[in-house]
Length: 438
Image (cartoon, rainbow, N blue to C red; front, side, top):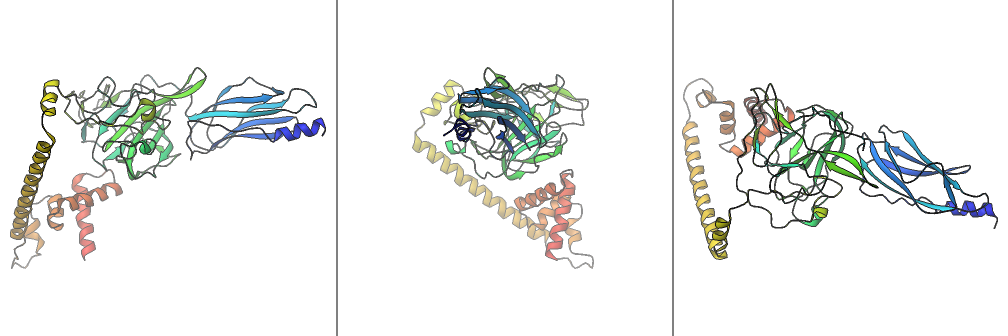
């Protein structure tokens, strides 16, 4: 076999791609292409985000390159091809082999957060929620660099989630259904990532199944609804995980880190750093007032993953909600209560709740029967019922007193038109209900 044949045979053994920390469904690749004098490496990025990549050559024999490896580059978005380097035989007539190894992550490792960057609260005006895990407070996760400055905001399932800052959606995960505190859930949270003008990235994680309302490449404005809160992935309950992230080169590796950030409220606005226990209200009409910090007691999770388990490459998908630490004397007293006493007490509370709930339903039905007494006047039957009532009261009566059904109908109208208020949502839901019954 000639030396030339040795070269050609060896070339087929090249370019074993060993990639780490990547998003499987993101359109990025590093390819090796044959050239007359060897091979060239190219990166292709068809997605909406810049990609930071490290490319190394391993197990190379009898090779020469036109640049030094490992190579650290940022591949711009938009579907273009970026030349990474040329590899050829070091000596004429001698066969050569090599393999490539690459690691990459979304974002530009040169990006820095703007000094004046601020973020609105990621929920609707008028809503208020207490901040859970936050920098400086008690934490069960948020120990790794990608979540050190993240916050958790407990909120009911289905609460509208808004963009905290304008930018471009660069990544979404919307296929996850369940949430639990088991290892299988560590990388299974629905999420949205938005890149801001300064290159930083906002991440909104644990969104509900069917609760992602945007798509990669879409431009969003501050305050625009992007999804619904949920509890997918490694999570102890419904909440929103929010963080501002950037990519950094740390020695010979690339890593995603979270950055300190400030929320703002009010008009004129005032900025504040999120703190554990703050009751933050989204008010962008009144003069800004920094929220107070009033921690409340919540039960902390007993199952806590290690930092490496809790925060992998898809940052923010591995949270457990935590609460204010119970004083030692109270904790000691609670530990003295036997299990059967706990169970008896809980059963008693459950029975008491069911009794009160049944009594409430009876009173509500009696009230509805009084309201529905037939009238012998010639005007429409609903006039004496609805006269002087709010739109929501009319909707509840139309739902036969079922408040949960009324709220579901109103939430459907919110999704169709996020900017409407409660009265308008109730009115539209009532009108739709009448059309459905006609």
